[in-house]
Image (cartoon, rainbow, N blue to C red):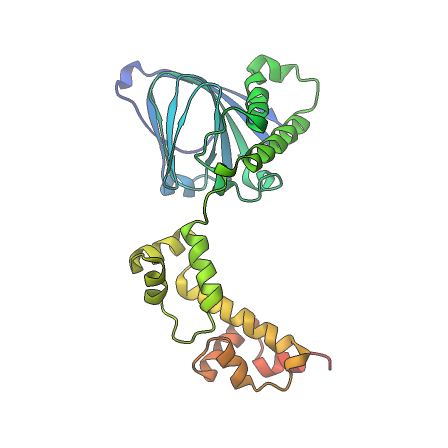
Length: 284
């Protein structure tokens, strides 16, 4: 399924069983296990070849999931989405029986464009949540072997129900993440040549270290994203025929560069041509 660290209180007495069945792009894992703690770390994620999410449906027992600063208690009959691209802890507080439906991330995004926004949020009773949980509860090892429809169609039905469930619950729409807020601030302020990481961190009431860590977790940096925003803005200005008489130095300044030569150098590194060469390529 995915590489995990597993801790048990009494190793010699631990027992578990997993039965697997393929449903088109999805893989159903029917899991029965004694009490345990599962930890998915960044090292483990890096060693997992495929990016996946998991829709966990509890049958017996209950678990506590902690991911992205959110905590969820998952009881029998309810389900929760787990993001396999971010670290998480799952405490199986009692012996448990569950369905873990592994969903390829690229496929899941057809139905839920931003699955990370809905992780560690219990989908329980009422509305489309009930419909989703009912379909998941009907999946067993035996029922998977005798499905009246191809597995790919069943997977699509589950994806559609999941989209309806997360869309029908206002509580499942969390406020923008810290990363989203920081990116929004950069988009608003990148034209300021004196913009610094410290000023953005102060704007959001966080430390400089947390700001850098947030961008690092998104596999980028404050400087790289700021430079990308500035260069993209400059490129749009240079390709705009209405601005063809605007001096290159002014394009540089309006894009947040204090030094035109620095702008020209970074622009050529990014796009392979000088700013003036790009402008001349535009038909008048």
